Image 1: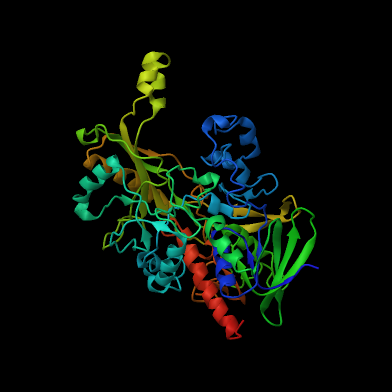
Image 2: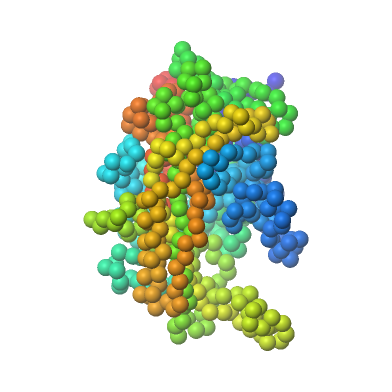
Length: 561
């Protein structure tokens, strides 16, 4: 009989789960890593990584059949034939939208670590202190100084390229050399540097793409084909980074097609004893035991699992004693900004090398250093400059030699950026179990009921107008603003629903990411977040996970778990 007892069980193999598996195994524990979806092996299973556009039946686009099969994914850019197999089958795994919520999921080994945008930024004390300062939600139980060493630790292993800027709202890290700005971006960055009292700064995007090699991983080849899997290991993913490290210990067991349906709970000991698992293929159930459980199934699936657990003790699930489990769902709102054309003699004849997998970043500058806008918190911008491609010539010329001549020349320089804004935690933005609706395996699905509020609406005006103001000040021509609309979930940065806090009466997790109701259960993915900041959250999940594992192993050695 296969081993059914481990020192630790990790649920989910994405960014957080991969880190948990690495850290637990390297600290000497035997670990079972559960993944509900199929396996994807590094390099071997990146079947489209080297394909050219003409090798796809539909040139990499989408078809009506794909849109019918993926009614949620089709709402935005992720749906295309290049990597559609890596997105969840929406008919097998539906959910209920009480209000619109775009939930983009990857159910496979590595999860969305194979699909993410790789933008990697530290939080600052502006973020960790905001809830307490403004009386929103609950106070974070940690501050930047406590997590800074763990940012250092995960950055060195993951490989983050970026520039040193000395900004208090965007702390510097352990960076590899940045991917430099191109000519158009550098021109705008230089002009902005002397404007706006120095508050607005255009810097290279900080990204989990290597510019220098790490053991077993080569530097980025500037292909910008990251979402197809990187055969060079140039960007951080579970497959390229944390899983090989965990496997190298000889203490990891990876089980794909394993749906965790319940955390087993001992009422007398007030501890978890293991996890009940449904085989996604055979539909047979197995119970695995462990001394500690790490829940890293991604924000909403982790909360779903907690809601399914210990219901004989707490009707709403493990971690529900505070009444906050499932509440305070957040994301980042975006798709508002500005764009225009760069017409400057300095750029004549300039081009750029390859397809850089990042662009520029403008760190948050609103509502810091004593400024007060009519909304709380702020936003940062992600954008790029480029030269227009051959498609610009289609309308003007259509066919013939003139068309070919024009298409062979790079077009005008263009530049633009979209803002990513913070969404406040609100109790009424929530998820619940829809017990009337089932998935392919007969399990209840989530009902999601959330929306943006007035704070976000007011912020979006600045998100548009500020970018236009910056571009015009930098000499960009024909500047236009846009707001292309946003629905919760579109940022693919869902957070909250099992927040950390200082008080078990108002939070689900303590300062070490332990469930108050079961201290040997740790939740370290996005569900733990008490606020959302305005920067991409994945680097913070990595740091919190490494920190939580260190605490868990220490508590195990002290026989406190």
